[in-house]
Image 1 (cartoon, rainbow, N blue to C red):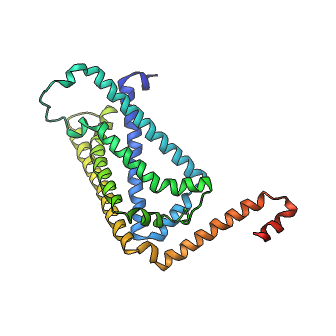
Image 2 (image 1 turned 90 degrees about the vertical axis):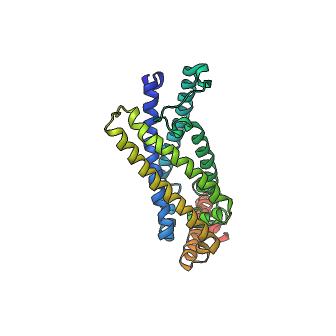
Length: 266
């Protein structure tokens, strides 16, 4: 199959998966913005997504995109190094058009993956995965603002996130125009335009991420997400819904004639 057997095919796969991931990152930063301007609505979005089938399908598709993108990135890097052989160790002057990001895409990708692992441990594992496993802790899985509060209460979190965002900026600025080049859209007229668009897009998205990290840190230390009466009421509702769901699940395991007594004992 030419998508795997040829260098052009592998680059095209990288371009397609990269474009999808850029769109996801853009959606993610817009969703995070809701947590700043309307925290209760952000929790409702978390509640809407949760472990519903459409959210699980989207998560599985997103995971597949990440895995394919990473595999093909490593594949192309190994292929390029084999093609260069010992010549890669020679000290030569780099042409001006060879950007720093293009020489370090794999390293940038590793930094982003490490940041992604931290992010998933702090949020996805405690929200969607916890709901899938039925392991509800003190914080309801739908209460996204409480997980923001828990994560950004530690000063290490914004530092790690900003490092990840800077790596993401370099990765996106190169990857944006590179994916069009891989798709064959490469000429002297459009390439400078695509590079400019990519730089602006990456700067806006990453800039918003950094602003959000700073605001989340300030709000976490001010107790904004813990002391807001409206949010507290929302948290109580989520906890109540979680308890009722567990009650119904446990009662459904009882014989039909024993369900009322089972629930009464609960």
